[in-house]
Image (cartoon, rainbow, N blue to C red; front, side, top):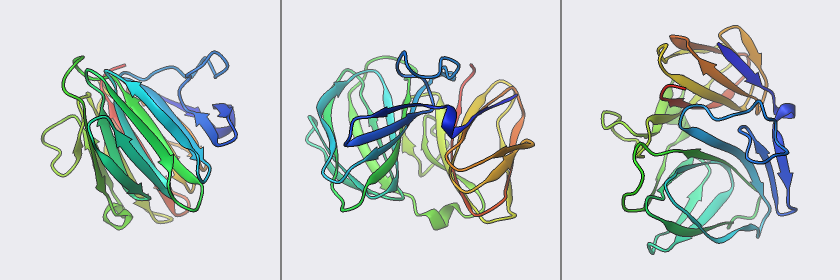
Length: 234
């Protein structure tokens, strides 16, 4: 089963310095049909103006993955961590028992990033933060695991959720098959380009909830950048 969440159907917010589209409903004004998918509860497509950002604020018991698409995000938190995370990089924050952090656009172009929230397997635990570059060239023609709650995914940033975050770069005409299994589900976003997935045409910035199928069969209709979260049962 595939449910296409087209860009124009997504909820949105505009605070001037922040323009966001919500693949999953986060307020009463958002599309009520766009509910959580297993532990995946938030996927925001954020654009933050130069000089803008989120002031110091807190989280607990959530895994937050930031996928930077354009520009760079500055990070600082109550653990003493500071970072400069640029396009192609991924950062993860396990909020655990509680952490406060600030994020801001510290580049000279609008910052575009995905903010993905997952519920952890178990509440609590020490908070932590990490980041890592994932060159787009390494994802050419295939999905690469960027963050994972499974120890066998060597090289991925660790998270505490029953999920994997994956990225792929496909040239026009290339195809990839990502195994899922009937007991798992996935959410796929076309960061750029156009694709066909399991017979469904998807345009730039569209999303799709994929459930109860053995695999996602994807063909790029033009050069495309893809991000997917493979999660536990719905």
